[in-house]
Image (tube, one colour):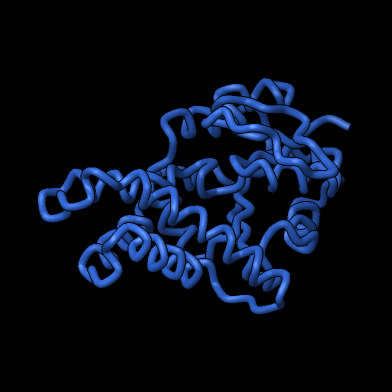
Length: 228
């Protein structure tokens, strides 16, 4: 069946998760992280994801904002800023205002002009996602923002992917699912979606039973993959 519905992961896919640490490092009051902001951003993201997986498999769900804060606490301690409350507060505030990657607005507008359903499917809590969508100015080109809080478990649990067809009344074969996380794209392939992995960093494919259908360097080619 033809693609009717394009679904996007949020953090790292539409929104640049390194932007918070990068912006803070450029502010005079946080110049102390100018030489290590990349490491902070990498460790933060690594632990944020690891904690979602661990909470999912141990049935210890909490909201993504809590997990994001816990990941940042670990990252700051790992890089020698464990007692820096001012830095923690600033980075968390900036995370709520992440900007979209440059190609995102035009890509989403092209999908909507072509008659596609568009939505976010994210681990993010509803208030986090609403803030990011508003900050990036992309609300008008999204039909919905779907949060795992509706089902109480993080990706890649199948109950998360179930939300898409339930919301749009479509078959899995009509969905193009796009994620910057190789594991997310792989697991969504196993679920039954057609998938695109946005591999901005040129990383190897995750060793999972399933592979993304498409591997792309950024989001500019999504309308073509959707058949537009």
